[in-house]
Length: 50
Image 1 (tube, rainbow, N blue to C red):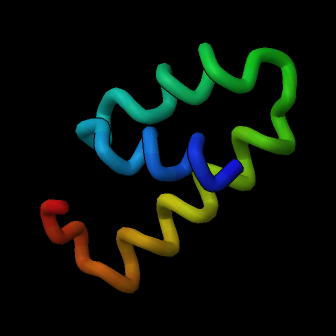
Image 2: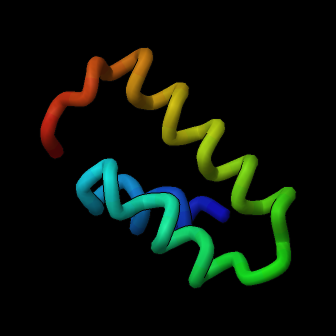
């Protein structure tokens, strides 16, 4: 999950959901967890560019 999170984090925000759909397939729980991590990162880091 960490690698998936880091890969999604490098993408522009509008592309993340589509990327996760492709990578997670039918695993909605995994996708939701990564989206949650991304949202938390956005709140804590303020969307700073990496």
